[in-house]
Image 1 (tube, rainbow, N blue to C red):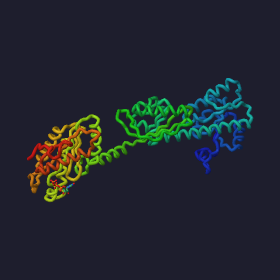
Image 2: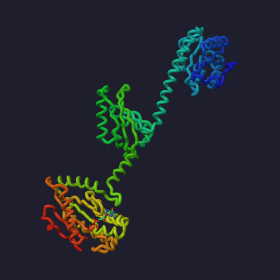
Image 3: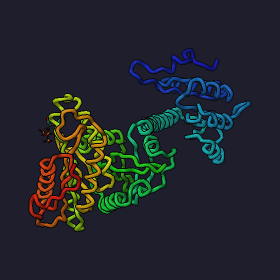
Length: 460
Ligand SMILES: Nc1nc2c(ncn2[C@@H]2O[C@H](COP(=O)(O)OP(=O)(O)OP(=O)(O)O)[C@@H](O)[C@H]2O)c(=O)[nH]1
């Protein structure tokens, strides 16, 4: 009988403390030798299994997964060498340490044993204490290598499954490793990024900044600290840009290395952009709001200062709008403002033009690099466009339709001027249009003499 009474899965289970005794399979065709070894090992607290042939040893090893195998070489049928070869060839048993126990003591026998993957070789006749000492040592080695392997596997599982992208980068910017999340974020297959350089992913200026930081760290690893988290635009494999938070931490593992953690913030970015856009738009009419217009005007003003180009401001006010609201209701007034805004917006065609609702029923347009005549002509087409909308204004003393009064002012700004001057001039021109009978455009150049300078372009 080869098996001890307790063989089976129960014998291999963990005890209540979670620790199980090491199990040793002893393979020897000589019953005496088997019995002696077994008694000795059992006395040291090991669980033992015995087999008297190579074939039986293979079968048992696959079933009970012993922690160690003591294997005789000379056996009838399959000898110890062949048994060892087959143990090492099978995935279930290949990692079980094998110690040869043999009366064959020639060096080439011992070498052949090691060549087959044995971890030790004990010569017969046996010194039982020596056997126990060698068994104990091998079990300790196995336990510690198993622990290391488990730790490595645990780490690997974490790295493979984490949501953040992970990159290991060398000091020269070469990517050494990426995890699956990183590959997926950036559109690459497994191992495809390894060997590439961060310059392949980042814009040249940002990549250079990182390379400078790497070089500083490599020159003085003890002084360096984490580069912190920063928002970067990374090139996806298929060309599009992805917005990510990148956290870089330096570490020294035989060489200076940098651990990069990538966190996808495209979604935050999209909502941030949407918020930013919303902050620039008038909620009722969906054209630019006053805040956006003011900052746009400030930029164009500065540009006009540099280039000396003319800057034209158009101020537009809906005529008798209070009366319109009183007649058709506030909601009707809102609809009208939307239609007027839409019409105005269609006249701001160049990137240097902007139409905005400045407040209430007042609208403004900026035409950069546009002189007074051109701006006045544009204003006149806006006036005509709105009149042609034929939005009924039943009680208006000016027209049966909605009309607007428009003031235009043009300046070649100098350092001595300010934006206020341009606004005041356009406002005065607009009020002159109101006073002149509404539904008309008046234009002026600040600096010309007051109301006389206003030119009537279209007076109906
Ligand atoms: N429906 C609506 N009305 C608004 C809005 N903002 C301002 N108004 C109204 O627009 C009207 C502007 O009236 P006024 O400034 O007195 O001038 P007006 O009636 O347009 O007359 P003139 O400018 O002299 O032609 C006021 O009644 C405001 O309540 C808005 O968002 N929606």
